[in-house]
Image (cartoon, rainbow, N blue to C red):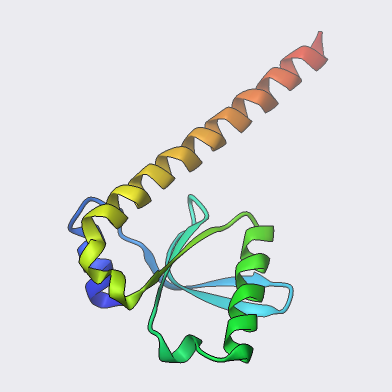
Length: 118
């Protein structure tokens, strides 16, 4: 995870929170790398901890619960360490889309308040 994080930040990705706690319906989840201000997370997964039916089901439940809370989670296998340029560009684009969506929602709310005042 450290090499993954340092590889991303050296390519312009903002410094993430590490092992960020998020309370979900089934309990606390800890995100490998998280940017809470954008509700974006990156999980850097090795193969062995995520093999088997039980691990597979638990991973999918975790992703659904986080999505229900508005988080967008990108999962990268350890083999992706060689794709850091592409991943960093993807993460920066994701932050821009999330920020644009937030600004759009704020403008829509502001417009509704103004229209309801007249």
